[in-house]
Length: 74
Image (cartoon, rainbow, N blue to C red; front, side, top):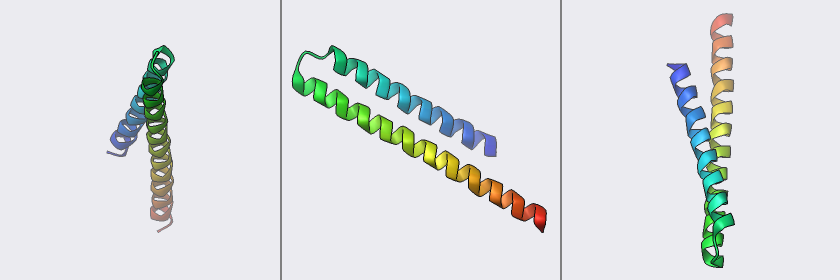
């Protein structure tokens, strides 16, 4: 069950990064300034979501490692 969570989170992060890349590409192709700015804002938001997913995954792994260590000590 732990692997399912990690796999899902990794996929979430990958999805966010792909969406950020797509937004960046749209911004590069945009001819209107307001469209380009909107795409760049979207890219920033997707990047923040990817970073948050990575932090969450790291914290979850640390917590599970600590829990496993505590259980092995007891």
